[in-house]
Length: 176
Image 1 (cartoon, rainbow, N blue to C red):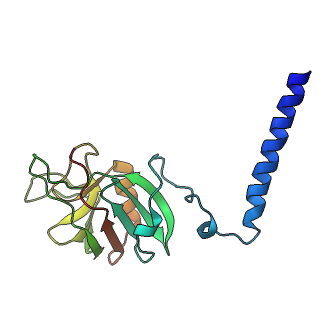
Image 2 (image 1 turned 180 degrees about the vertical axis):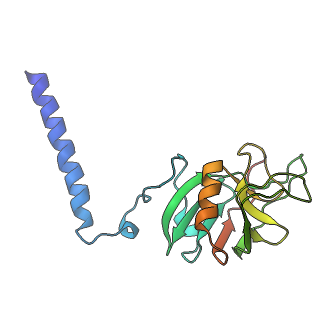
Image 3 (image 1 turned 30 degrees about the horizontal axis):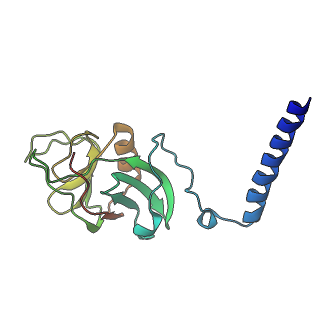
């Protein structure tokens, strides 16, 4: 009987703590006021992104050090974060994904790189030199592009329009 009473008290205490947490946000609380990341529409599970490093004006954010990316609107995450594989200066002749603030220049559903003879499905080109988001390996670095899973590449292709802002930051990722 004592064990049942302890369990009931623990459940009641948990409910009070959860209620107090939700109530403390107030009825007008927005996602921006909450300390946790907004819910992702992606099924990927990766670390929470460092919100303060991506400008609110960016539509797509890439943290090359953490190897994650997300889409956002007015600084609020709308998709992701998702795992990515940026370009790295490794022994396979890869190029480092350039850091900076860019705009989407053009898109191609199905393309093969002339320079590397590599497929680039759902390519969204954003930086000089043919750097793009596209479907690719998440374990082998690219030649400077940002690899995404097939589902994430398609989502980025469908939701990033020509002219969208892309922020790439985080420094050099660890060698693969």
